[in-house]
Length: 230
Image (cartoon, rainbow, N blue to C red; front, side, top):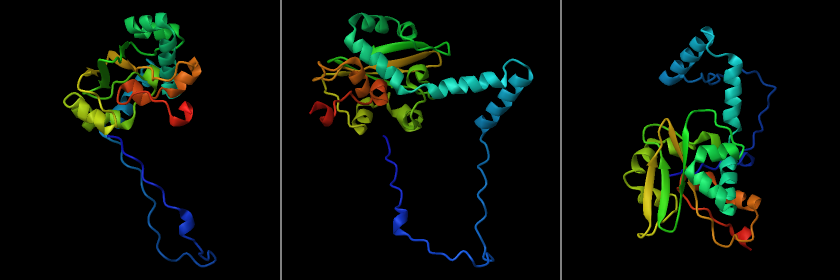
């Protein structure tokens, strides 16, 4: 599913020994113009300007909300997962009411969404998707990755989840049920991955460092690196 970025060329392999004292009378390529805004970008701009003009919201409120959105990262969710691994009472509360427990943990929610935490076990593996758009537990994970928003993932995750997981390098045994949960505008999901073996002596901070965004979406398990296990 995920694509690897191409390697940038080594500029050292292409020396530029141009004499810049000569006259620049040869033609240059025109400066590229910015791409014209699309339909949704135009609609967003028009709606934002209308709300500001009607004094329903101010520019400062918009700026502050953008700052809040930009401040959220998967590290928040990783801390929640680590606490659930070491604190059985916290884990039970998290599975019972994800949003309330996260708020008590110090993570604020800036929307009216419900957060349902799904626990992976020896018999069940959970996978999160949003088939309609890109609904995502942003208060605890930040912005969704591009592949999560891609039509390919959204369409195939609910139809052939095992194949999709295999493309992420995750093979689910036949005896393990794969459950796909479809996020909505009001309900978001977070996967509570299984704690990896060999981490009994890890403290909470060390455990949190193992938890990745993709594991909390459900496309990979939490793994212990060879360096950490050594």
